[in-house]
Image (cartoon, rainbow, N blue to C red):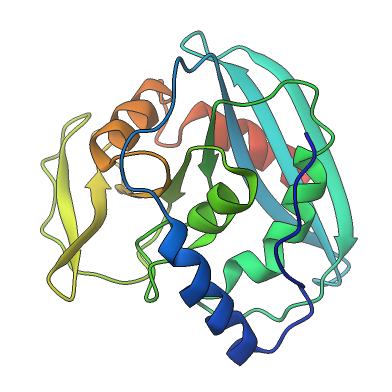
Length: 219
């Protein structure tokens, strides 16, 4: 797939905020997709003490969750580690990897946040807007917001609230484990995002998409 470049990647934090505030206006929070036959897990690691960004895309069939395609891309890291700006550090290499896959995914599950972000524009939103593919943020930890504890049962969830807005959900994918932080990225509702995350999750805490992508990104 060929991805249109909407902006530069060598930026100051102030310039990045302007881009976040601009592009977040384009985020669609309703379902705008057809049949989902392939889902993609997105994860990123770093090499050479952070100097090289290593992005991995793992494509699985849905709902069978059979691993069918993947790509790994490396490029020099051009943005520092600053909480709230993860996408500017990771997305350039992710886009390189997405351009290599032969199977077009119908849905992206990103290791990170979507709307559950202080400026409502996490990596899942950024990738969703740039690729125009429906995207979900699947975070292992909370960036912003408050919540009650979800019931300790598979599929249970509670809202994640920030400044009186529901910005995502805190989801138990497996009893006895920490919950995941689910937020929509683009072209999907929170209800559908939760359903697809659970549809991609088997006996482990993390969705199979995330597990496959993490193995590829970690080397």
